Length: 423
Image (cartoon, rainbow, N blue to C red; front, side, top):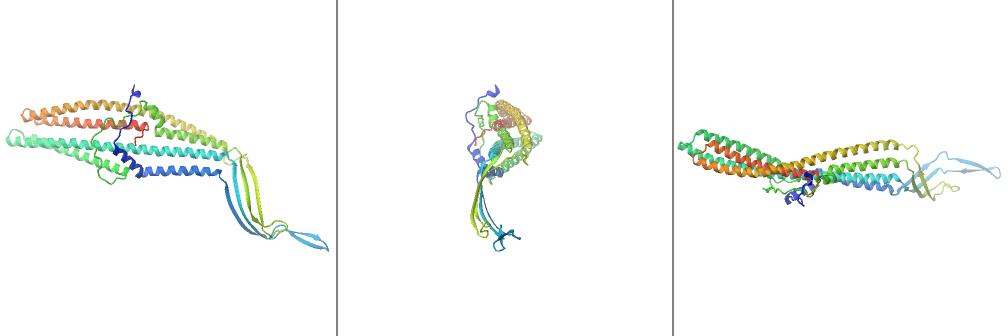
């Protein structure tokens, strides 16, 4: 069966390709931005954990009270004693501490923050995967273009030899000027194709330089594509993709985050308890209301939500809707992933078949070209026959290169869908 195909035990890739990927992880701004996002999520986790820590504050104040409340008390000899309950000048300096004892909301916030950290980390890995495979596609695109340029150069050399032969034959009167003009037209067309390929190569290098931070113009010297490169590690591509595909992992992370939203909404109905303590100096203590005295306080407070402003019931309803939406998104992505994996595996099989046929096609076209050259020198073939044989050989070589490139791309797609890491 297609899904039970056995692949090589390790993913083989060139070492310099791994080096380029590592450089991109260090220099590409998008990866750097995702690294900062992960760091931000880590700080948010620590911030939520701080909800368990005591809250301390220091207060100092001065207040002038006027009029000052007082009471006249009768004493002996018909005299009256004026008693003040508050001083006119009030001084306070105090350190206050609040320590949470029971707080279910904080634990829910920490759980949500950790879930968000997991999501951000998986998003980072998703971006790295995209960048790595994008570099791999460019890398092998450069190799493909380099090899195509070699084929075109070989065609130019053959056509140049033909031009020399035809020119001699035209001068000797055994060939027509039409043959010379036809060959020159073919030569010009091949030159134009060569120029287009060179332009595509330059564009590929420009894209690679942006991803890796390189300033060199050309630095990939590989000229071969190993057909065993990017062979899969396992014989169960779908099961591997279901567990390691970056998009699937992020979708599962969103479900976890939605679950914490539900938990958080439920816990808003739960009471919180905290220890409160304070110590400092102030005046206003009877009977010496003007003197500053040391004082302290300690106690336990409990808060029971009855009709909180956060409306937990509505928050839970929204969280449940979000949970259902994320589950449906995961189902949709899983179905799409299954389809993409099956198509990618079919592409691998198709390109392997075409590549094996192209090997035979190249050998046949090469043999036909040799016969055409020999027959043309003997005067049996026409110039058109020779040009046709040369074009057939060139097309066979280019088709083989294209199938090699298509095969490596289809294998890369299978690995990317399966979340395979080779860097």
